[in-house]
Amino acid sequence: MPESSRTTCCIVGGGPAGVMAGYLFARSGVRVTVLEKHKDFFRDFRGDTVHPSTLQVFYELGLLQQFLKIPHQELRSISLKFGADLFKVADFSHLPTQCKFVALMPQWDLLNFLTEQCKQFHGFDLRMEHEATGLLYSNDRVTGVEVKTPSGNVLISADLVMGCDGRHSIIRQAAHMEVTELGVPVDVLWFRISRKNDDPEASLGNINYGKALVLQSQ
Image (tube, rainbow, N blue to C red; front, side, top):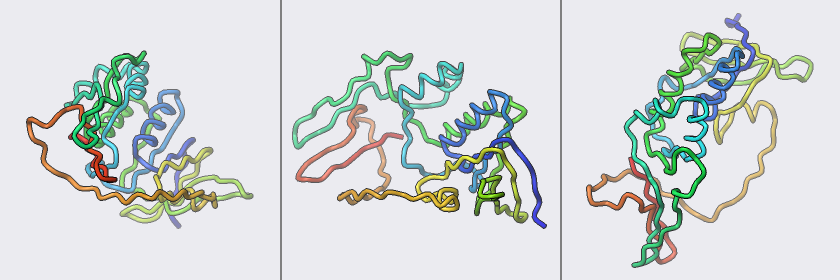
């Protein structure tokens, strides 16, 4: 028989949404288990930006000062180049927030920071290399998660199950939730290039001849 355990809240997916939700639950005294299928957070993500609204949440939680000690870049405005002309499209200096900038940092630094902060709460349990494969049901009610681990299968019972496992969510599929797909007539090619010292800090990209080059600093 698979090993079994119980928690109050089981969160599937150790990305920003899952880990932050786990932090907030644990901070409130709720026993929470976060499942992440990878063995660490060190991989490429689609977004490495921490926006002023998120930084404001960190400020209100008392985490901002520590968070900003992590090496990062501060984007205080955003410009786009249309052909030969450069236009400022966003200026964060007018925001009613503690931080009037977007912080640029690798997402693994954000996740490592948050999980380190979670360790102060006895009810927080992060389980790496735990991949959700399905849901447990009782009388048509979700009661937990089926999990695959390097040492075998595990059943985790929970009063609440949260699916934070991204676009190809196993939890969403197992719950038979329908997805509305909206077609986007854009092809995206994602690649990494080196950054030069004289590259403009505030430039987000270039648009010309019906094509766009979006830049993201690291």
